[in-house]
Image (cartoon, rainbow, N blue to C red; front, side, top):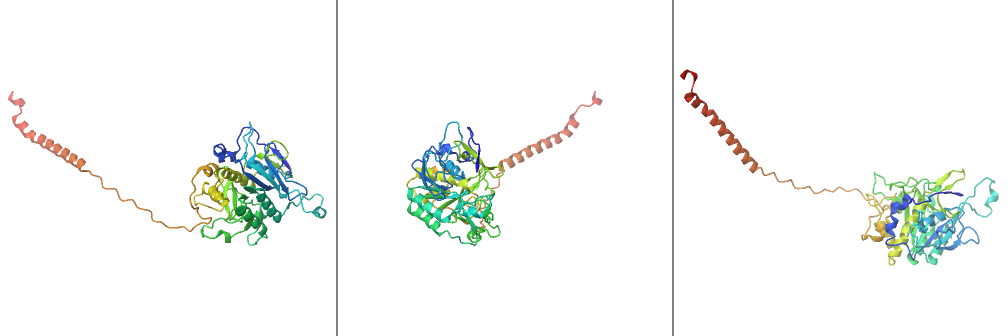
Length: 409
């Protein structure tokens, strides 16, 4: 897969403008945090000097720094790319270290599969759910304080996927190894195409977990991960973002700029098999924005547990009117608020509540106006006018009796 160059110059990408990163950096830049990127690998790049090689579950002998797909390098750049002069693009947590673990790739497939295909067929891709569980444990044992997983497995909503080892690994990393795990909500494509229903207006308090069309792993392990949906530059849920009862917050997933896995610059899209350009977009790129914010929060509040960090980020997001919904969770992530605001003791439930009728207080009627002064003035004026009129009428006979006429001359 080739890359489409772009994003060069002083212009700040729209997602960064929405997050107000320069102000957030007044409080934290992620120093001291190790962010694991479990993805397609992360290529060495001059703007990722603090990159540790964590291993490779795709190619034997690899160390995780080969990225044939380009995806993992984009994710890593969003999290921690160093700022440079004359470039608007920067990672969210530029002082954090990164750990790359390659777990999947679209250009690999299981050994021996190529002999079963035609020469013109594309590779099936490779990624194993048990390998993902191993990668999570490796990242946790490596000391990662934040783990970003921009990979999803989507299955039918009525099917319970065999992902128990991954669930156990997520619990281990969160509760025993002190890592905050950030995952993507998934895109409406391929196995995720069915998406999930939103809130039923005829049954707004219905249990969303019982009406799933699509199971999304690892997002469905809601007790241990922070799931991120995508929003556009107007703050609206992206059309491709899969809703679900596990969505915690949302972040920009469109108009993405990040690092080029095959060069030293930045890109805005991938060149597809037809020679066209596919813009960088998806919940897989929304998740690293939140992972970067988690690194900022962990650097500023090192005493917080992973679940307390997740609560802080959810509590300080720009919430929808109903407090939570399955498209954007508790709302759009706000780095500055996450670093500075007081956090309430509880959050609204991740479940709509039944509508209630509440009698609003009725204001007491205003006292009638006091018109006494006006009335007295009007009566007095009317009395004077009447007296003057009577006086004028009374003078006419007198003038006729005593007046001088022409006959007297």
